Image (cartoon, helix red, strand yellow):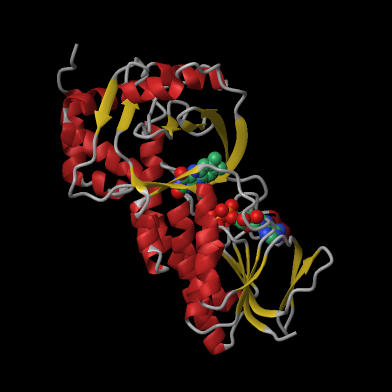
Length: 396
Ligand SMILES: Cc1cc2nc3c(=O)[nH]c(=O)nc-3n(C[C@H](O)[C@H](O)[C@H](O)COP(=O)(O)OP(=O)(O)OC[C@H]3O[C@@H](n4cnc5c(N)ncnc54)[C@H](O)[C@@H]3O)c2cc1C
């Protein structure tokens, strides 16, 4: 079997983007994923501005522009204050894409530039030697490669075995509730470990797509999530989405991995990309765009290593610095803001201000859609403005 330049493990946004960019540069690339073609659960993906830019970089800008943009967002404060935000037309914002479509589209793009796909194949171990790197699978021999890009997602089993990811570090349990109703799928996400005061609710009906931030710190039961949405049932769209519903099932717990610091994103003949490299945004938990961007950066470094024929740990270490340059400062700012949002008092005041001040609502929405960087909101001038506002008289 011919030796590959690179083998990409994982066909999510991180792996597909890495494979695409490498193959487009002329490398011989194969991608292996344990799922069957089309074997994904329907779900909505919030595609940030970064994700849309990454899709455009894979010539999928048309596909992204066909997705619905987020028409409104509701922020629900701990005491029930509701602020409604509608996008300002000239500003780009998130779009909502069926998650079941995203990965097949990404894999098709990778295949179109020559990436060989091995689907329904699970890698059980990786061995690097002076000759190259071999990935073991159950009963299947994959071609040897010069380099592996490991984009296995949140669970990080292979990366943990290689000692590149600290076992158990930076996992966040995400409680997801999915409900099917006449209007479509309703999704709610709740992260009590990380932000006890914040939950995301994305009812995917004809027009009621929104994201809400509310306090649900007393319980993580699905029914509590549902009742937070019922606060909004006077809204036409919500009442449509929730009419006749029984309380939700218990939430399904999924995990998200967010944290650059517990990961060494390179090893001998290996680069990590996507969620396994800890690139999920610490505040918004946006992972699709971050995974794709890290895949692009990994491909850049892999191309350089292939050109030089140098694959040692020392040769590949510049990749860690590149990831920190791309994500580090923004993510430190986001973690700071995340700590503030743990306080119900702070959240209530933020929602209250967003209710009265459309400019401020725009700023908060910009953070969650990532059309506005966290760092951009924490400039010295803005910090002074927030301090004056915080000390000023409170509305009754
Ligand atoms: C419930 C939920 C909702 C989310 N919603 C959003 C959202 O709206 N917007 C957003 O930006 N982010 C969202 N995220 C985060 C986002 O989904 C992830 O951060 C992103 O998919 C990470 O991409 P990835 O390519 O690194 O990993 P993944 O998308 O997880 O892909 C990893 C792939 O590797 C394959 N794989 C794993 N191990 C092996 C193996 N041993 N052998 C072969 N294949 C293997 C898996 O089958 C999988 O296809 C959400 C996450 C969750 C859990």
